[in-house]
Length: 353
Length: 206
Image 1: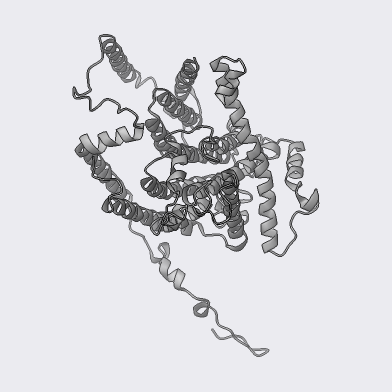
Image 2: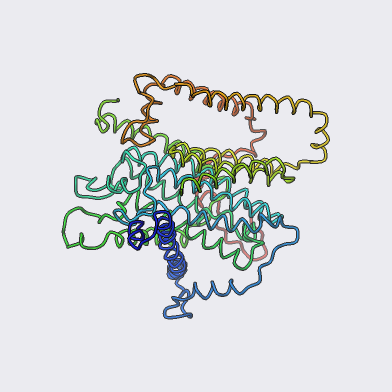
């Protein structure tokens, strides 16, 4: 894109600046629209499973419900508790929201369609997702209130615990792909199964990893059944209890952007990203642009998220911690050993240099 | 040009936040400034092309170590008047440490001005490998040339971890404090629920 702006007669620096900002807006604005629609979808799926109608009043089929909600919070008054630590109280939702957006910089939407095609893409995602703890902890502490603080402690412990096993799961994928670059990971999945199936999920050693990754994603984004941070029966509304108006909306948007990010990671790392599911040309599906395949997969995973939300009861906190540390961590470690052992035994990497 | 702007942005922000770490009155604010300093340090490392180290810095220090700091600082009720009371008493020691650091800094800059040490091996193994990414070069070095040192460092960390667990582990005090998960999972409704049809006026015998 920089070349395009340079061809308009800008100097390199200006062209680079304009191109970067344009790229960011090109990702962030559709992402916000997607978040609004995904909230609508979430509520619709949830309602359908509960045999309810869900939002159906604002706009055709209730499609504009999220925008109406957004307008509502926008018009509300921002309340800052007098005993709150004001600076951090205001900073916390901004951190949550910014971090949720920042991770999208390295997500490839199609072959070559990526804002920052860096070598350490997956590590960048890990780094950014480890930052998302701060928004929660800061909000809980700055609210200077009992329940948000408990919730923040819970959330921080939960996110750190599940990040460990997510890290090991990602290492399995990286071992198989031989790269940290997300685009190359997707390309490495082309024809992975017998030269026909695109996607690591059909690999016997990586399929259990995908199941664990999906569950860890639920825990990492604090979705049901791991939404102990927002357990209404115990903690009012969790760490965002004291927040109102736009600061509350920023938490909301950040949370759903994170969920979308996790769905996208599922699609990219295990289901072949923008590649069609099969490498053979049954119907002319190579003509379908890759971005459509990617969005379809993301929507499928989001449907799984909603499905789980509507059907599974909430975990107890000690069960959650046990699952993370006593089940997922040893299992993922074992699979790192198995995967690397298999790859070395089959000569995947050739002789050690 | 862009690199220059980015460098000064990161450098100035880093030094400023490092100063705020010391001057902030609230310990939580100190930790948050420290996190900002880590973050800008990572930015500087990206600028010199060490993106792998930068990501590790963010993942390890910001993602794990600083969270622990924050936890501790938030949970502890620190009395600052008491902490500051020791300021005069420890002043000479502080000055001494500051002098040592200053001397090291001057020596370091002096040595750098005099020409850097040639740490790279003459056979060029330590030089960055052409058209290889950061991670591959680091991995080839750590798991090839410095394998023993790397493994020894890993073993030391493992021993430290085991030691920390042994030191803090306490055996469960009573049977109530511990739970058998498999027993909880194996419990079925039939084991816990009895259906009774009591006649009117009579209680239920359990």
